[in-house]
Structure formats: structure tokens, C-alpha cells
Length: 124
Image 1 (cartoon, rainbow, N blue to C red):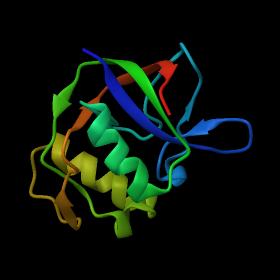
Image 2: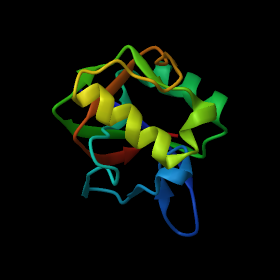
Image 3: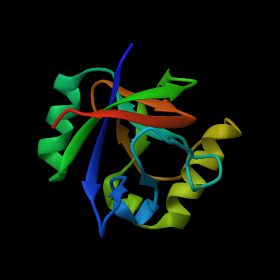
Image 4: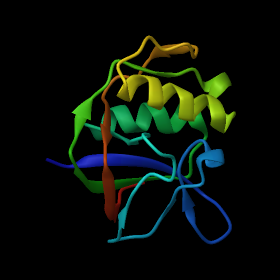
């Protein structure tokens, strides 16, 4: 099953959104998250990736392969997402199955989390 990754071009690299997470991607290379306990995010359809692409002012969408895909219902609120300590606490609490003390909201429709992502083809 193909998955889709929404990215923004940085200085000669493809970066995750938000770019504060500092995850960089290259075509045909497996990438892991930089933050402990945090997964990577992809979409389960091109249509849902395009919706997110428009909302986030992204540059590109890539078809990708993933390892250990799973659904997620909530994510850290974007306003909090730029504070890395908040993101780290959000995923640490989720891993420990503790009540999360970080602001959250429903994940965009079609969001899938995974342990690794490999970009295979540029779609947009």
C-alpha cells in the first residue's frame, strides 16, 4: 500500500513539517525520527496528503514506504508543536500511556504514524 509524505524544501534538503523537528529526507533512503518516542507522520491517500499540503504551505508530496504503520487519533496542537520540549513530552506520555498534559487536537484525516519512512517517488 502506498503512503504519502508532505514535505517542505529547505536549503538543499527535504524537511518535515514543522521544520523545527529537523527531520531531513532523501529519495530511496530510510529515515527515522530525531526525537525520542516520536513517530514520523504520513498519509494513507494522496487526496488526504493534498489537503494537508494546501494547509501547511508545503512544497512537495512524495509516495513512500513505511515501517510499522498505525493510525492515530490525536496529535500535539500545532501551536505547541514548535516547542520541542512539548513535543517530546507529548510522545513520552503517550508511550507510557499516561494522561497527556499537552494540548492536542484530532489528527488530520488519513494520518498514519510509523517508525521509518523511505521516499520512493515525487508525486507533486
